[in-house]
Length: 291
Image (cartoon, rainbow, N blue to C red; front, side, top):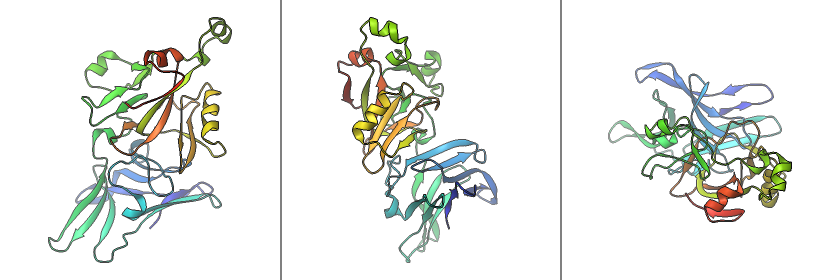
């Protein structure tokens, strides 16, 4: 069975959760594939109106925003974008005929890979998402980053401060963070040039789940990706993933959202900051910092 969509015809195929474990009528969660390039896997709540969980983009063999033991092909999952027909679809096949394996969206909103055990006559879960609050979509708000191994789950990205200190202290991180220092490109250009202010730069954040709402620039190499972002004031970050290429976060996306710090795997995200913020970190125009 295929899960996916067709951008030309508008057809969409989702997996729907049950209302309850003993009620097979349609529940409040659906799972499917987004129309992004490259595509992402999503779980939506409210029958598709609200993102609940996100896989990160597909790199040709796996979703790069999933840290826990999910290798795409190795787990029987495949995603096929067909640019000629406008179709993007995913399939799930278990290649061993000795047992039964299914992909299930539960009434509580988990996406589980489940095996049948003949010896105990029961189902058991071998993989499940979301598995931690950090996996929940936008848990730390815009320009926030979630770290399940940190002293507290949420922190603001370097160069950003809580939108509300009071709510942040209460552990309510949904309001996210705001930029601490205005970018040079956002200021009056004549006054900024006369004051001798240095150009904006990029801070390299390593090993992270890349944020949502990216644009894919298929014709830009790694150096061109950086130059494109720096020359566009609306561009707040970029990333170059070898298996994908150039992705930028620009325009009216509302800020970087759904970022997670991984202890292993993850990608490099280059975050645009004012030169003074980079100076506070004791670094130059571009740098490498793990947070």
